[in-house]
Image 1 (cartoon, rainbow, N blue to C red):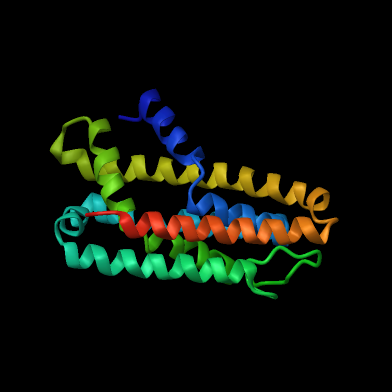
Image 2: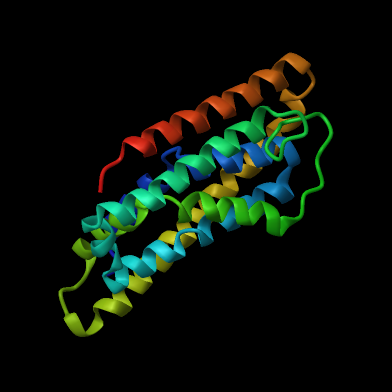
Length: 204
């Protein structure tokens, strides 16, 4: 059930730079290790609804309902564009500045969670990823899906923490120049816009 093949597959998926990774890096660079940890925690918990949907079969409903899929999708697109604005706006929540902002951990985690919650492709992704690694015993399928999902979440949190702490460590090296900070903020904003565009093109 919990095979090496699943662990390798899940690890490869988790380390691939995506929206959650970019957000965690931005928090680590902008606000330091504490913010990076909260960002990683939020992104991890944002996976829970999609795992539940895959386990309960709701992901299949989302996959077949174009209206529901598009409602969640465009809410996610709007949110990513909002984060892009927050990265370039002076005093924005995601802006990388020389002085660390003191945002509440819950607020940082909530943003991270919403990034994943508002991505409908995650439910469909888990519906495709997890079943091939089940034993085939219908009586234990739910338990196995829950275990695999829990392992995936643990890997996500661990990898995101490492990304965030790396960014926090690099903070002092990168933030000595106003030009570098401007470049970082514009880069994060551009990436969020690109991710929003990619999400907008996704189909159920």
